Image (cartoon, rainbow, N blue to C red; front, top):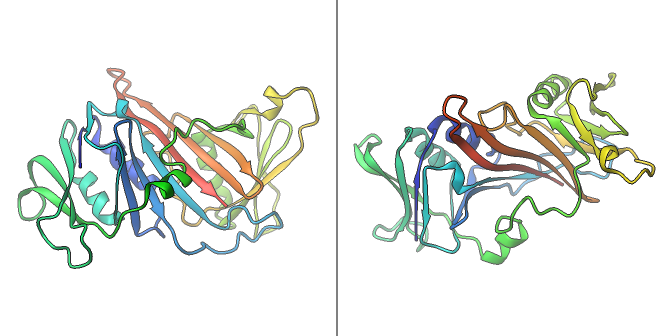
Length: 294
């Protein structure tokens, strides 16, 4: 039960982990396999009504950060699938200690009773002293584990790029961030409306004119660009922004965000991560941050 990674850019790793972890998820599931490292939020209570007149999409959400091995200098997993429920603050502490080119080895340790269950601790071992006691490792209490079937239902174990439906809209991520920041000043809940060739953002709790993104500002494409010539109907999604850490972090700043309506009651905000160092073309981080809205 070992995962060994070599960090390329510690700052982008820290920023991305924070962006993908909502404040209302004190616990997260750390998952690894030979082809990915993932962090899944654990939110057990609804965020509160979206306040819109839509079908309720956006009243609650979960997040998934799925990192590709190509975003690390080295990536080796001895497990086909391993997961552990840990405190988000503990996982952030591990990434906060990381430096560029550090090797971090995650493993389950059953040597010490955690006082809670039989799972022990998740040990994050560095190749140098870290932490207040100057040991070479940090210990994260394991609060539980999730059955593999549960992870499959949550889409963690499958390639997130395999979605049968095309996105409603592709947007410039930085412009989307700036627009949602502006509109959420009037209301935590935002109604995103995708029309023929534009996307509008309207605060749910205050009657104001919508902020409209178009081809000249923010919109890269909509379903009209890939349609069959038929009528493209307006689609609306309500998003509760109160707990979402969307911000222009390293992996998002120069990229895109894709909006999906996956089912009648499930929507996605999907940030593909593909940041590259401008000096030496090194992949800083590669993968996906997905906000599931339901």
